[in-house]
Length: 171
Image (cartoon, rainbow, N blue to C red; front, side):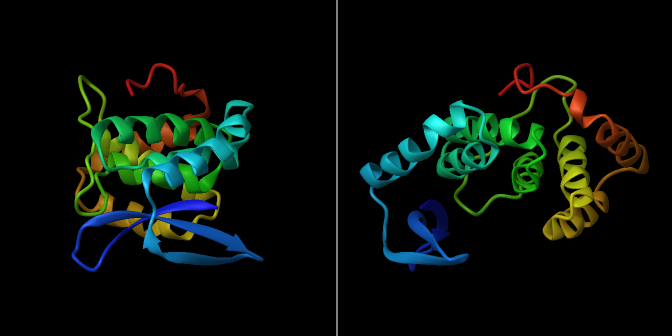
């Protein structure tokens, strides 16, 4: 079972429960209520805490990105999965830092010398190197908006991404 976000018929962002059946995704028509969302989170929480990257990714999905605090929570979980080499989590990290979120989502503000676009480009590069198809296009679009020096620095960061730490990332 997954939590997915989508725009409902009124253009408002809603969370939906989805299940994976033999590799195919089936989404319920009714939007998920908070109890269903909490139940889905609980199903992954124990595995996520034990270090399972896929469960950490799903915890990130369950939190992302309707409020600033939920976006921070999503980043914490995505980062744990991303650091284990989980490409979908790496891509989602890039999307959040690039502020490439659905309408109605809340992005976090980055502070100090931390560069959100460079971080996004780095995560898109890392995910792309693992074969994540959407990351190639996202990196290209983002790179077109950045100075060449920032792209070069993000590429250097991508060669050292495994040295990063989720615990001191500021979210």
